[in-house]
Length: 256
Image (cartoon, rainbow, N blue to C red; front, side, top):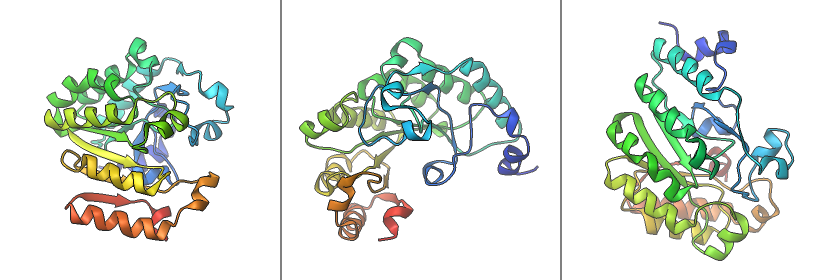
């Protein structure tokens, strides 16, 4: 059987929604899908508008991608046929549980499709309680499911200013714990690191119910110049090792 990577490169037109990320994004997950175009969470550090060549205001008025679920189903059928084992991330350039998904429920449909085809799903969200709607699906197939949340701030004042449309941090943490208690594999993305002390505190708050941590620095913002990244890298690795946690340090932070 030819490898999935070769298949995707040689037959790229057949894969229209599920794709292989490139560059830094590939460190996070080798396959991904974005069911929506844009996101209403309005995080000031978001790189996606520039990636999609959209103004920030346009990006923050999300929409459903044309015929996305039918195309997603076709992609899943192809990946099942070639025996794909890598998890498919929902999502990189949007949030699978932004408010628009309450009405559209595309994320639930996508999870059902992936599970039906024996494919793994990896969730990354700042949606908090909104995401709990689909815990029944994730817990029914724990071998095919991962649930993750992005955590940046412990101080709600900063969260409201920088991530104004996203769920409060405490709500996200509560959702992670609930997922873990239901037998779902959990991970946390500590990226971007805006205030190192708060990122370290987030580990203290979540260590008992998070299975895996991914840590990456802040980029493309003047705030990154105020941080001693070498010191933070050493501090975060020490803390994760002391707690006996599994983790991945992204290359842009490893370099310090």
